[in-house]
Length: 304
Image (cartoon, one colour):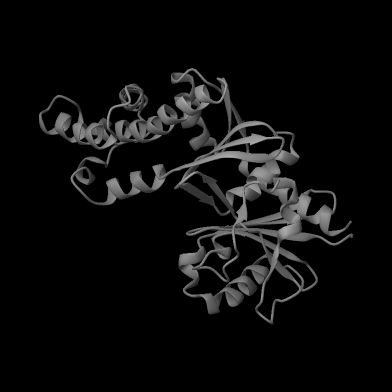
């Protein structure tokens, strides 16, 4: 198949699109704030997609692969989760065609994954595409971390999900910054290195997170700690809580000494600092490169 293919990472708040050729090269990119929430309803996804294609100058013959919240219950159409036992490299065999008659035959949606461990259940929708890209780039084994609103820690063995844990790190930081007793103290620089290190050190003590978060407020109102550091301390506590839990899982799973982070430069840098604090090596994969590698896999398998 010599056609190009358009991959769309359609999230809750944002949308990113990549035009990929038959050799896996990215020909064009587009990013906007037209995520699921901005679309305004299931019946409007078709019009939103048409606007995106028009903005990018994409012709009617280009197939479209979409991942993320577009396939959720609140998206264009709900696509059932795959069981985590399904290898990532088999994702292209499970794409769901869009049922909207105007787009049928052209647009398909990537399913998410559901992981079950006894009574515990976890899910991902969107991150599976990045994981497929990581596998395509040779990262078939080990711990992969996808930080963000809902940070994912995933253990892969030969391209199969062995463990999945989600942490509401980004969402909690946003909520604490927007309202509540800490919000008035969250106007400082969250990247302050000293404050971030304080939060990481406290998180490593494995104390209850609700207690350590309140102690940020107590430190400020008692004038024992500077208010300007509060956002960075909170960030360190939340990200550190991920690492404190994950390092226990790493130890239980054979004592892995490193992780691979798929994230933006700024966010990956914060996770790299946390990894060093918790004694872990940290490699970083560019999320755009990873996503394009995944779309290339869909393109390749569709043409064979």
